[in-house]
Length: 315
Image (cartoon, rainbow, N blue to C red; front, side):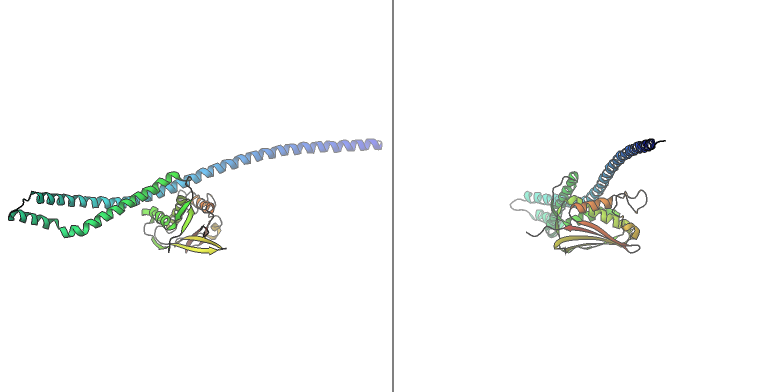
């Protein structure tokens, strides 16, 4: 075999091997591309599912807020109805008395005067003079309270559509506490709120976060423990912040779970008692408002969730 033939065969072997390698690479690239398309489709589906579940969690939290406010509305309506019953009875007595006075002539006899005097004693006019203004005032303020609560309920239909507005954290905390209702059972709630702090954002979303943190605290205490609510200002890195702390004396969170507590779908509750999206949603809302949500916890001692929200710089 000549040297030229040897080089030719070597070249042909090398060319055949290169073509085979290119064919294999092309097949692997095609398979990899198909896998990438499949992975992108799966990720899009998971993102869609996550968004749907987050919306479901928001709706569930909204339902809880609505139920709590409805319970709060029943209280002023209850005493307003009771007051109106008394007012009706007293008004009937006063109308009867006025009619008796009208029947008196210019020179009433002693029998008519005695009858009128008896009716006045039965009416207990000094008692009415003291109680009637109080009753009317209570009814008026009770109805104002109902009007304000209904205004809050109307906001729920605008979730996600609200413009940024000034938010009284005292008011938001009060509404979040109202949503607990009977759920708090035997929990003792201690409030250390100090002066009110105003932040800017979506009021309903902040209420959702506070409501979720409070309900989690009740669950951690199994309905029988101490929950401390703290509101305080804080200056950090030349920026003023509002800090809302929800501290419970419950079961606490294991150290290995603290890094995952804000992950979507992660929950330490029993099956059927949580979606694992509440804290993830709350964390997202805090970040959306330029703040943060953090936790410190120790098993058997309790947990402290800290919501940090920025204040507007002074003008």
